[in-house]
Amino acid sequence: MRLPDDTQRHPDRPRYPSTDGSCYNIPQNRQCWSPGYDIDINIETTWPTTGKVVSYTLDVQNKTLAPDGHPRPVHAINGQFPGLTIRARWVDTLRITVKNSLQHNGASSHWHGVRQWQINPMDGANGITECPLALGQSETYTFLETQYGTTWYHSHHSSQYGDGVWGTIVIDEPSSANWDIDLGVLPVQDWFYDTSETIMYRLARAQIRNQPVANNILVDGTTVNSAGGGAYHRNTIEKDKKYLL
Image (cartoon, rainbow, N blue to C red; front, side, top):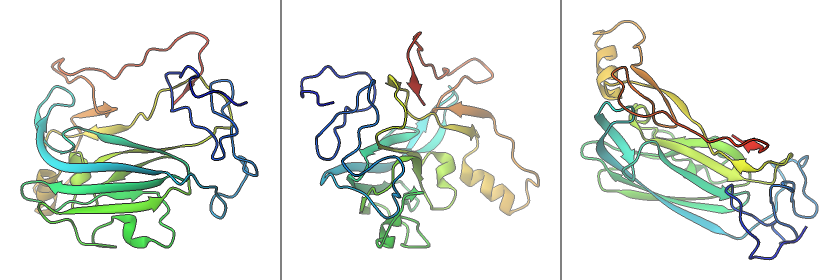
C-alpha cells in the first residue's frame, strides 16, 4: 500500500514509511517492512538502514516538583519529571547530548537494554565505561538503533534515578498486528517524599534497618496523594478502537 505524503495523519505514532518508501504504516496496515525483512528476522545480525540521525539534549537539573501534589526536590531532565521520551524508528541513528546542570552532583545517563555493538563507550554507565559528568560538563552519545521496542534510560550515578533522572525510549517499528491509536509508554514507580540520597544515608548508617516504605505510587509520573492533591493519569478510550500500550 503506497500513500501520498498528504494522506491524513492519525493520532498515533508517526506515519513511518518502510526504509525503501514502498509502503506506509497506517491503522489498517501496521506490517510495513522493507523487502527481505519481516517479523521473523534475527535483528541481532540483520537490519536495513534509514540514514537518518535523530538528536536529543538531556539537561539534568535541580528542581522542586510535585508529581503527586506533594512538593519535594528532584533531579529533573529539561525541567520535567519523568524525563522526556526518546523516540526514533528502527535503524535510525540516535545522537543524544547529556548535560550536567546539577548544583553539587555528577551525572550520567545509561541507555538501558540498548545494544552497543562495537561501541561500548556509548553505553553511558559511569564507573563502568566512563566517569560521571562533572558539573557543567556535557557528553554526546551516538549509536545506531539496530533493535526495536520499548526500554528506558536512567542515571548510573549514585541513586539518582530514584530522584528523577530517567525516561523512556521507544524505537518504532512495523507491528505484527494492526492498531488505531498509540497510548505511549505507561511507567509505574514507587515514590518517596525523602530524596534517594537521604534514604541511602540513613541505610548506610543503620538509622533505618528495614526496607523503606514508599509514600505513593506514580503512574506516568503522576497520581493523587493522601490529602487529595495531585492528579490521576487518564486516557480516553473510544469504542471500536484498538489501542497500543
